[in-house]
Image (cartoon, rainbow, N blue to C red; front, side, top):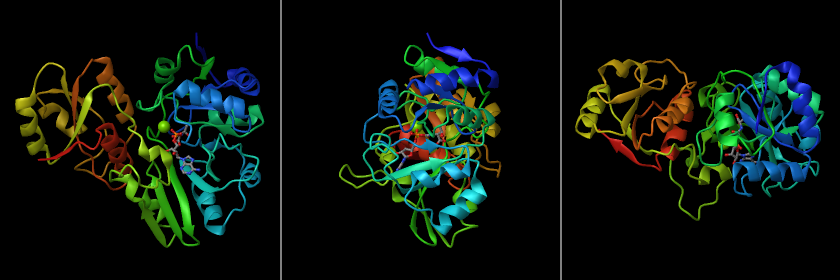
Length: 338
Ligand code: TXA
Ligand code: MG
């Protein structure tokens, strides 16, 4: 049985599990993570096993003090330093060549490591109490929607890990932005997240959104972020992403209404939608940028035994890019234009 550790007072108990090499559920401001001692290869193998994650997909390493970054990476270029000063603690992961401190298994065999300093106070407390950097992928079973509450983590990890630390609902609701540096002035977004390309553009001359973010890669393509290869973030239902305005979307849905069919819609569409509709609070026609409810909406569709989920596609600017990126993967690239 998984134990739910209720609050920051239980951090010491969670840290004791980590020190014994066991993975523990950790709240962060983005999604819940499955945390372990990043420097202990056996602990890291347990995380891969609990998630059912392919061994070539590296884990992000979490720190809670700027000083703990330098020992993990070969060098910190000025642009990386600027990124950290601007966005840490927060939802940004910075990839740099790793030192020998990071075991190969943590890095999925790559010679780089992604480091993040999360903003969530419970995550910070757990990292500090553990006394080591914590490797933490999202706490879902591989392929499933990421968990944004402790209950989601319990659903996926009960019987597989000893404990999950309660930290409330995740504020961002979508994972961190993963970036690499192409040169001294160029940031490459490998995975869009809560920190947007527009925000990154304020501190670097060039921001490139990697091709893998919005397009399907050919099977042999070299992928800079291994996670982008896999079908991902998917509920049990078949997902179709529908691109179009509210009228066109509702018309498209009309002949498809049936038992087991559900629409994932913007808040503003909910009243007009005749299908069973789950609003996912992300933006479309307005500038409101909230990603917080969309993974939970995918899980809600599963709980309702939905077999086909039609999702009104969000815009691809701001945080919408991150939501769109998750949705096309959930949809296996099944996108319909109406
Ligand atoms: O917000 C987040 O980033 C959450 C919380 C728990 O911190 N973590 C998370 O981890 O989303 P995960 O493992 O689910 O996703 C990490 C992504 C994967 O797509 C992985 O391939 C990529 O980051 N990644 C990690 N290290 C990398 C590296 N060294 N080079 C390229 N991509 C890397
Ligand atoms: Mg993940």
